[in-house]
Every structure is written in structure tokens, then in C-alpha cells.
Length: 150
Image 1 (cartoon, helix red, strand yellow):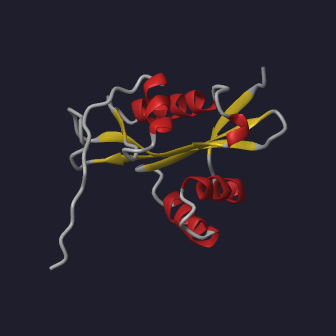
Image 2 (tube, helix red, strand yellow):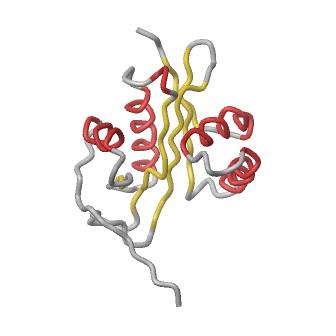
Image 3 (cartoon, rainbow, N blue to C red):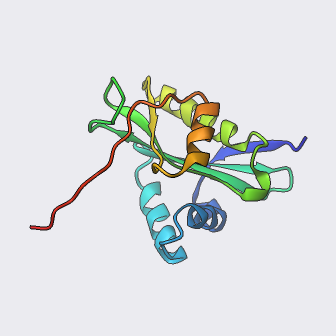
């Protein structure tokens, strides 16, 4: 079994962080991911990211989290930690990387005095639903959002 390590992402991780982010949100250009990362690093009390790497230092997974003070669907407290995004390189899936990342986010949230971790996934993302369930999340609601141009 491969050994992994998790650390809080920093500016030194910019290349690996932006590459993994691009896997998660491919509609953004790498330059846009880099700009968002630089902005996130300026808010360490509200935003946190973790990278999981193998023994050779290759970044295999990323989790980004925030503290949300607005209403978070299905949560009973406020503020709550929110898993904004999680991605594991396809070659490293089903090896415990996501569990390590969620454990790091959970520890960070507890250190902030928070008692809930919220998350979401698109309705058709059944792989993410299964991952969340395997990591101890419980489904609380299903929502379809609507918009009307005025």
C-alpha cells in the first residue's frame, strides 16, 4: 500500500494546487485558478486547502474548505465548515486519499470551533455521492435551483 502525507497548501504548492483545481473545475483557465489561489491565501482565517502527496512528493489530491456563515442546506449550526471542492487524481482513487483530505479539513474545522462540515455535489455526480457516503457524510437535501432574467 502506498503511503501518503497531507499538508496545508501554501504558495509553494501553486503549480500542483492549480493543476488539481483545474481537474475539478476545468472551465477555468490555469491563470484564473492561480489568481483565485493567491486571493484565497490572503484569507487564512476563512479559507483552507490541503494537498495529499505520495512518498515521491507528487500531489495526488486536493481539498478546499471555507467557513460559511450564511445558511448551509442541511446544517443545524452556523457558522459551518464547507468542503468547497475535493479531487483525487484518477490513478490514486480508492486508496484513501479523499479520506485523508477530509480528515485534515475536519481537524481544521474543529480547530476553528466548528461542529459541522457541509458539502454538496451535482445531482448527476453519483461518484461524488458515493464518496461522501463512504466518508461519513449523510445526505440531507436535494435541490434544483431556478433563475428568471428580469
